[in-house]
Length: 243
Image 1 (cartoon, rainbow, N blue to C red):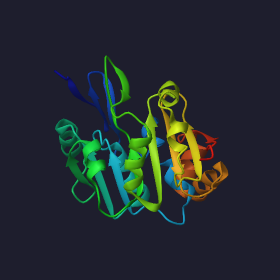
Image 2: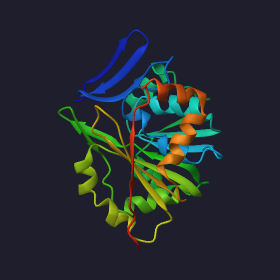
Image 3: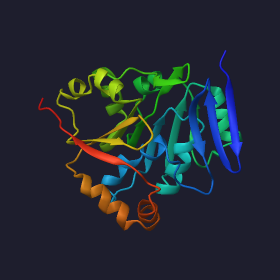
Image 4: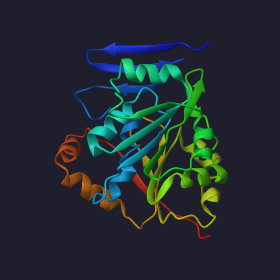
């Protein structure tokens, strides 16, 4: 009962499910101009240690995998999705090879709850569904979910969480979920023009928004995109309540 469509215009590929866009990719461009460009920004606050092992919950057709591979060339990317169509499109249309990532057909909630392997340096929670063309999180964010995500991280791992819009972030009770003595010392909110998504980055170390800007300006490819207005984002420090 779901209508899947892969649209191609030149080299640009897009995946839709019931009118909700799940992925977009152009092989000659790092950036998409949309939400996928924000999901990996939290990992750039500490450039001296790029993430080597990355867990992506909700692969779509693999846009973020292609970006992560080009940005960090990590040793391992594990992508988890419960939709075989998404994974098939990732392999057959978006060019995600076994050398780039291990794609797992599994429920992300079950995978996270049962995972007991080595920690990941970066965990990206991009779990979305939606009907009638309106995207929404497919896993409710609360303190229990946060604890499960934390168990998948290394001690100094970074967490990136996608919310459909500010209303969804507020209704999630995000600050209450964090008010439990968690390891995170810094929290940032990422938004961009023309999209409603809000990405929250949780870091286990003290950081400033200027740290991110400094890294972007010191990296030639990203500095060029920033100067040309291709990498467009807003970052805001969010206050963590004492436990």
